[in-house]
Image (tube, protein in one colour):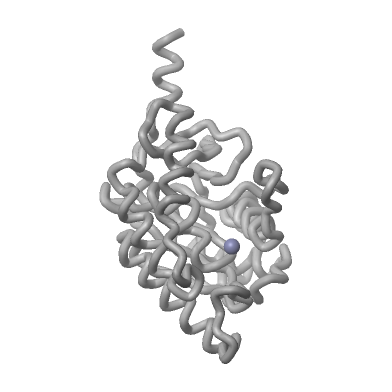
Length: 247
Ligand SMILES: [Zn+2]
């Protein structure tokens, strides 16, 4: 039994190809950037998909003369810079409106297109069932929608030939995703040791200058990593609920 438990708790290998789906620029850096940095260093090809460009911004960190159009440009550039720090090859912005994201069929089609085009072994996204984080935070509705649509695109849309037949006309054949990694899950079962890339995660997060302002996020990020790590006797970790699908 000890052996079985040890096997179950062993960190899974880095997936070869990954699509990382998020509602806003900076979501990825707060949540899963350590894992992605580690995978990128192990040779994974990673594509980040941002459903919005974060133009609703953040009230306290945004100067008074800021416009939504300027903020789009700034935040997209910040996300690209963060991805460069992490070693992520490509960033896609789907251009949906920040703050009022809907689980529409158009969004599901756009994400299905991205998955069929990039053909990931694993999709990383949030947990759509997470309504609350503890007793102090409500999950943002855009985060729930992003997670919901990501899973709906993984199954059944990406792998079913006659869902979105227009994608076949674009030359995009069905694709079966093998794994999903949900961050922010209440029942996490997989822990990635990020001690060796914690500084990279913090550096990537700091690229989101319009959101950080003068705030230094490192104490909070280190605190979270320590907390998750303590659940598996690791110094620093990110936690996931991982699902593995049959062929
Ligand atoms: Zn967000």
